[in-house]
Length: 108
Image (cartoon, rainbow, N blue to C red; front, side, top):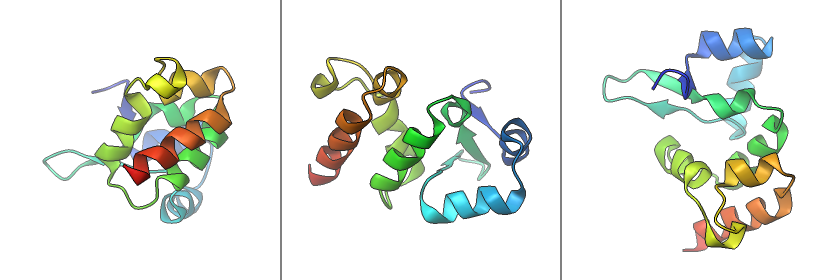
């Protein structure tokens, strides 16, 4: 999974933020972790992209879904996004469409 996910320390270093800033983002729902069976927590690499703020907005919209469910939402192609994954769609500026797709996922 290396390259797809990073430890808290790696994310903090790459984003040049504090531990407290990462904790605040996580507590607010803007950032999520995926947990391995061993209990180790990792942050998706897509938080390092230039679309980070939009990704955080979608993550927050997904509310209390567990990390792996959120991962699936972000990485699964959606017909409503023209077959793109939400990450791909955010990369081309389709923020409103991705937010709507996320809302639809919650209603399903």
